[in-house]
Figure 1 (cartoon, rainbow, N blue to C red):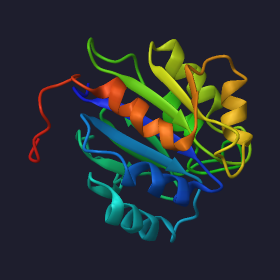
Figure 2: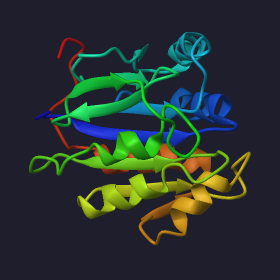
Figure 3: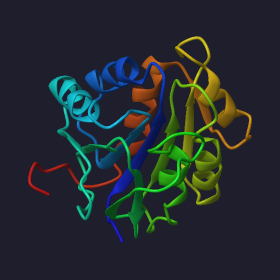
Length: 198
């Protein structure tokens, strides 16, 4: 099982812009970041490259069989569901759409297991249509994780964050420009200083 903190982000409509704003202001943190964005295959590589250009942590498309590394950002590729085996090994699978989408934030989040002691699981739902991520947020909260949803005013589309908030399992409802600060606060001092070669 992974020895790193995990931040899993579900996002859809308005997502590329929101993600660039979030990661442009975020310093390197002691966590592995997983982004589940509703995108078709073919657009995923371009989005990963655009995020990598602004983020302080490296961004790459997730690959089947890879293991999460702290201080890195993984974008789930379009056309596959993303899950984690043992909170660590990346599994990419085809299969039926969930919530009309593939990848699905619910599928990814619900694959998480209770973290090892002193490790954190953080679930974040950003702007997007529909309700994907709501059940995932409920699951993360049940694991003892921390949950965040973007507020209505800063969302391009408030569907996904609204559905997550309505579960009653969201700890913090925040404007997009406050979410990064909250992540820094939650992860500060959680591990030894982050090396470049973990």
